[in-house]
Image 1 (cartoon, rainbow, N blue to C red):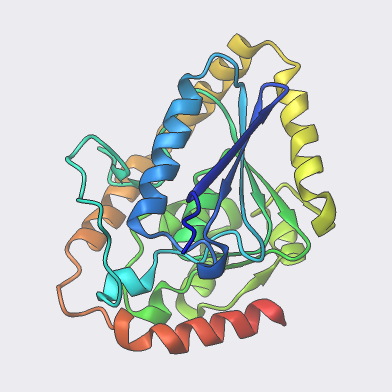
Image 2 (cartoon, rainbow, N blue to C red):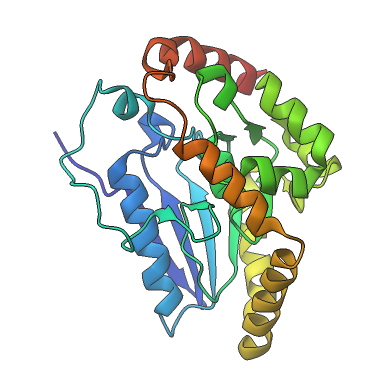
Length: 267
């Protein structure tokens, strides 16, 4: 059996393209992939030769969310849980961060389905460019677990409260074009053009004064916090952390949820 790296990194012209690389599992977030994503983003955030990150997934999916096989105990990780402060982790404002806060923009290049935790990763990016094959969904209610990575805050901030509630309560998928129309993504492009277009956006940022870029990014983050989003994240964090053990039916519902999601993503 040939083992493959969970994360692929390619650096060119001061842009780092980071690829989630579990395509057979739809890039589902097992412990290995989550740790690798965190460490990679942190390292690139410190790399003096990188100004912008582009985050994408190995086709056919961007990320199908947390690995339900690992959550339900069907598979186990040989990696020990990390100590607090080593990430990925819940921030002081209650938001569970899959991506560390770095001083550089992260462009999410959404190449396929971004579901539940995968959607939360997308929402934690700075800018989103979607392939016309991309699909977006919050399936936490379908599985029977509570979101803790920002969906109830960041999704509502992006597309409005009523649309966010509908997505969360139904679990239904949003097409790339619909995602563009409601303001979830910045651009939709043909699938084959996704990385080149994301690279063009990254290049436009690279060509600017980087001290100015990073100061503006810091300012936008401060402005968001001024709208009491920290309190909202904290409330979501309490909800996720106090969800009673045994309430989740993730294991029993995994096959049904996966089949339903793939059917919608193809339609």
